[in-house]
Length: 256
Ligand SMILES: NC(=O)c1ccc[n+]([C@@H]2O[C@H](COP(=O)([O-])OP(=O)(O)OC[C@H]3O[C@@H](n4cnc5c(N)ncnc54)[C@H](O)[C@@H]3O)[C@@H](O)[C@H]2O)c1
Image (cartoon, rainbow, N blue to C red; front, side, top):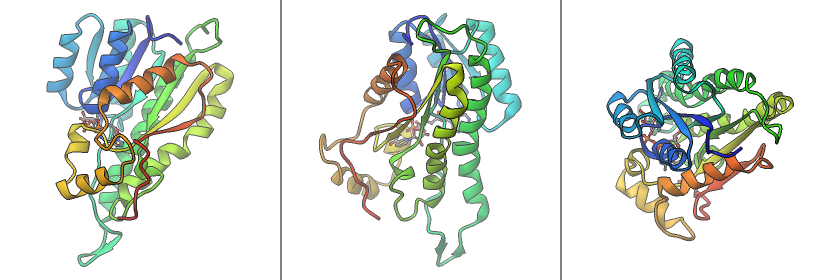
């Protein structure tokens, strides 16, 4: 599917990796609906690309909110071809049991609610819209790209909430592929390592330095544009389906 003339929803599109994807799609002739809770940043980005982007204040975990965002996307651009599920939070860092006792259940629930349930929620509602598209010559009706993390594969000490949410994102991929293949909808998962975004740069300096030291090459944080170039390729390469792709400078995360 060529990005040119397609309509993409990018959740978490107001910041970081999502913002990188928004810029990439617009630069390659696409139109984008930015779904995010951060109205200030989201509206400014949509205004920068007026006519090619809209902002919808959407909470990815909330059915009514996502439904309204999709309706706004269809009103502005007529269809949904691509979904990039970037919205996410790092959640609380902490061990399952610490000196304070067992980790509060709500800390775990909150991350699962946004990172895992939010990804599923937007995925199911956007997929229903993709099924309404006339198939392209390639047979494609849509592409869904979910964002996991290295933590979903090699979760480190203290990352139990985030790692579980991101492993769940990986686990939902194959059933999604198998459910949606007959309709010409592809599903892929990207697992970024350490990227220079408000979330990635927000890690404590000692954690960041430790993670940078684990990189093979290049030994620096990734740029949102590098993530976006991969996402763009996955949209445009019709033979890519059901793959988990790491983009991590060769990192293998140590236990702590
Ligand atoms: N930056 C990294 O190093 C890194 C590494 C691995 C995975 N990731 C993942 O990539 C994705 C993007 O991360 P980022 O670094 O760009 O973070 P970021 O904080 O820059 O952007 C995340 C965006 O998601 C939005 N968001 C949060 N909760 C939301 C909700 N309930 N509904 C709608 N929007 C919501 C935020 O407002 C924000 O704009 C996340 O899922 C993150 O877990 C990031």
